[in-house]
Image (cartoon, rainbow, N blue to C red; front, side, top):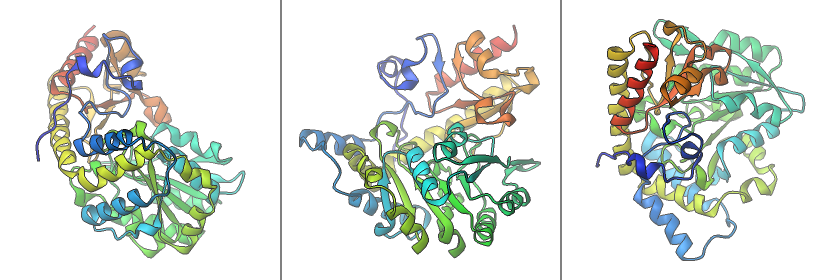
Length: 382
């Protein structure tokens, strides 16, 4: 395993992605969840091979990814997934919407647990459902699901829970006990659980993360996993996501989706994703080594330069949820952009609980991270 280093800023600014085209060159873009590392060679070669073969038509089926994900899940988490239980679609958000359409009646309701990934507020309405908020609890030992409030929401008639696992923006890895409790409540009240596990390969200790469907028969009965290689291997633009069902009920739900849900998967994404799951482990290990170093570095930099900012290192992923309320910054992202020329993700996008917070992406070079904190510290001193 070789440590993977971020590319130089000059090379990064030549990229045409949203991260590098949104702001002027004097802004350090640490907002959207995209990493600054070079693409994994097995993924590169898989995509290039399809292009050289002029193989850029419609997918024939999910088989390459289904087999690859089955193997990856078993090796990484000890999760037994039959390839026949795996389907593909274009991305996780599309997968979530289509799963909700199969599990939630029109005018039904979907529980989300803010502060949470901003599209979670928008995806249920896209599926003709309303949103019910059950915020996470912040305790002395960290964040956790509010199980009593979840049960109240289920008892009042919620149709589904949209679970973020690991939880964005906190990097929270839910405990097995919490997941089992959710599964028991799901069966008790007949509530579907759609588990977004896109950040799962980025857990700093693979054994710390538990796939929702692996925790119990109850989880499998009403649960569907939606995930992708897009965050861990930085291939969101290749457009391929995975949906997994492991009960007769949920298999039928996936099989009841329109054929176009699967057909819109990109053939380049299909083969790139299969390569990531099959052969991208050493590259991901190197990336996680770099991310772990930056995770620690961010804590050291904040302690030295911005001690009023509260930071809980994430257990998974490269996103830091920073509490700027000690500086009196109600909208830290706006202040950071205006005064420091650092682009952060506004906390308010993650729910009302995000006022005074901002999300920072530390999947960058240590030098860029240090410069960003220096700029923020200088802004705080104004």
